[in-house]
Length: 254
Ligand SMILES: [Zn+2]
Ligand SMILES: [Zn+2]
Ligand SMILES: [Zn+2]
Ligand SMILES: [Zn+2]
Image 1 (cartoon, rainbow, N blue to C red):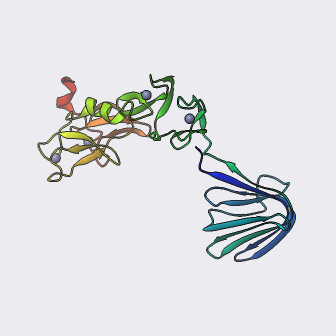
Image 2 (image 1 turned 90 degrees about the vertical axis):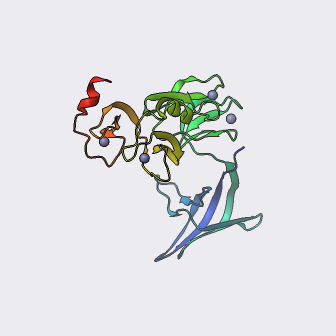
C-alpha cells in the first residue's frame, strides 16, 4: 500500500510569505504539499511557484466548510500562510516516487518503476538496487527483472536479493582469489556497507578494498587486479599508485 500522500488545496487565497522580506499575494491558486513538507503555491503562469517553502519543519492545514481552508508552513525564520476566501478543493491523493517503467509487478500486476531502487507503484514491493546496476529485459523465474552489475565480472541476478544473491555470486567468483598485500592472508568477500575484499586476518590486519564497479582487465604492479571502470582503469586499491607498472611476472601465467 502507498503511505505517502500529496495534499492539494485550491481556491481564491491570500498567501503571505514571511522571512527576511514579507510578500503578500492574492489569487485563485493551487497549493501542493509533498510528503517531505515541500509547499508549492501555483498560479496560472509558468512552471515556477508564486511562493514556496522547501522541506518545511512543520505544515498544518485545516478545512472549514464555511470559511474554507488555512495552511501554515514553518521553516526556521520563514513562514508561509495561506487562507482561502473561496475554496475550490481540499484533497489528499496517494503518491509514490516516479521512475523509469520496468513492466508489471509479479505480486500485484501494478507497475514496477526504478527511481533510487525499484518499487511497485501499487503495492509495497520494494527492492534495493545498486545505483550502477542496469536493469535487464529478461526476467527471473520469480517474475522480477534481472539486473546486470559489474563487480570484477558482469553478474546477472534477480533484483530481489533473497531470490538470487549478488553477494553470493561475487563471493563464489572472488572469495580468497586475491592475496592481502599487507600480510600473508587471503582477501575474503564481505559486505560492510558495500561489497569489499577484506583480509581474513581482520581485525589484526584491517586491509580492505571496496570492490569497484567494473570488470577485471589485468593485474596491477602491486599484484592486485585492475578494473575497467567508467572513469578508466584502476587498481582494486583506489589509493595505489603502481597502476601503470606492468605486472611482468604475472603476465605469462594468466
Ligand atoms: Zn505490486
Ligand atoms: Zn527472482
Ligand atoms: Zn592482511
Ligand atoms: Zn595496485
